[in-house]
Image (cartoon, rainbow, N blue to C red; front, side, top):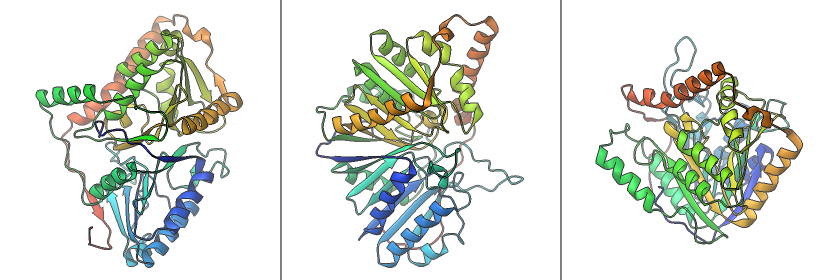
Length: 407
């Protein structure tokens, strides 16, 4: 997926939070004439989830082909009874890697379907990080999450549609062991790819991460754009704990005069995420990087802007789960209008709702904090390797019911 070419002639629209995204997504489904393809991590049994269900049912009843893929961990509440009206109308619902609970607890935490994709009639696609749940409506409660999504019209939609159709046809095989020459070939292909788009208007590239041939594609493009940046990088990420190579590119960019600003969680939905990111603060601040904690509510964003002309929006965090285990998808865009729109949103929350991590943190910490930071870094970074070393079990799609035809 990394080596797919940049494509031109696209139109984009940026959405912030569920208040903007849900009406656009539901309107697109309501206008569908042929096909709706949807992938999401969380489809909740709440007001938003039931509205999604009603919209999909209506589309299926008028003859639209509906395929929905949800994660068996994130959407554990999706049962045959919940979607019975949809499947009775001919829609198909697929659960990715559903597993039984143990003492009421979900156990299948790693290698999740974390993508958030919607394709309507092969004409318009939505890519982002917003799940279908009320927690994505900032007006719902102070604990609701801030996030972003993007709509795109243009040639890349065909690529996203083919990708979703392929996934709906059956679960991918278990991650194969990659031989040394295969790893070398993949790195060589990545190095020959064109990370920087040839233009700055209407260019798009769809990039996925899986556990087979595209394990590092999203991270590789992030690092390439960090190397190419000359003026400014603004990165907002919910779960930030990248590996050394990405941290090194951030540091190098700051040291050559690029203004690098990171927006991270100050009121996290998972305390462990803040603790992990916090262990990197001294390193980041000492490198000349400005670190801001978003304090208004939980931050769920996975976006970045480079030099005010390139941007990425998607599902991939910069942490071990997203970069090494989960199935992810981002849209990388070269379009000044979109990049400036996203930059304006991010600068707005920096000014209105963030606290900067103080530069005093760059002073050399006490020895015990240095030991703690090193231990946490290596413990968290080694987790994906430990998870992959466990005996791989096949991950499958369980289709609840519905049509059996494929185009």
